[in-house]
Image 1 (tube, one colour):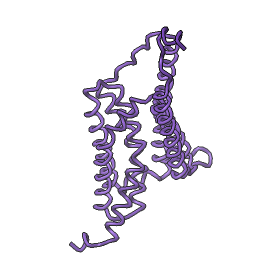
Image 2 (cartoon, helix red, strand yellow):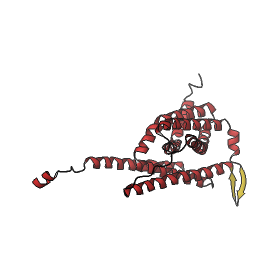
Image 3 (cartoon, rainbow, N blue to C red):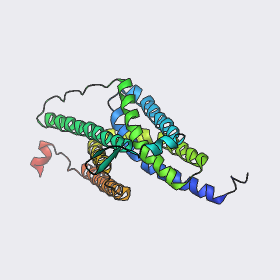
Image 4 (cartoon, helix red, strand yellow):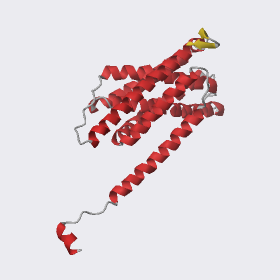
Length: 255
């Protein structure tokens, strides 16, 4: 009861939960893009399993803090740069993210070219359920490193860290569905989400070379871009409803 009555514990829990949700946005975006390749009936289950995998990964990392600390020890050197296990995970995770986002962007542009030419848009390959879950799990590990390191830096209270991660993942499970449907319904929003993933992939690759990039800059840029895109969506909606009415030939002659 003394622990529950401790205001510092509650402050740490609330702050850490908010940070975990913010740091999990890129994860939710990535999951939304990946599950869109699945049949509609499987998408909800894939989102739930993907986020459940993220929960297990982050909690497992918290319970292996000694191993996590060992990831920062240099394995070998490239010139004056010491390369650790964490650096390798960030580098290859960043490359994987760049590849997946770049491939999706090329497919979207190709579909747009076919539509502009009045041709039938070729249907993209439907991904297998297992392949999507495996890809989600691979990137979950990369995103989890960032999240868990933040949690460890905030507090040394393991139950608080686990509770914050559990609350954050459950929250993301609730809004991942609506976010996925919104992204699928608006192609320009999907392109923006893919651009975010390209940016995050570049940040991960750069950070693997020990060049620190403040996450504040990344998230402010993302928030500003989302605000502009929402304004564009609102403007397009207004313009569509203000389109001039089509007059019949008789009405045109009378005028």
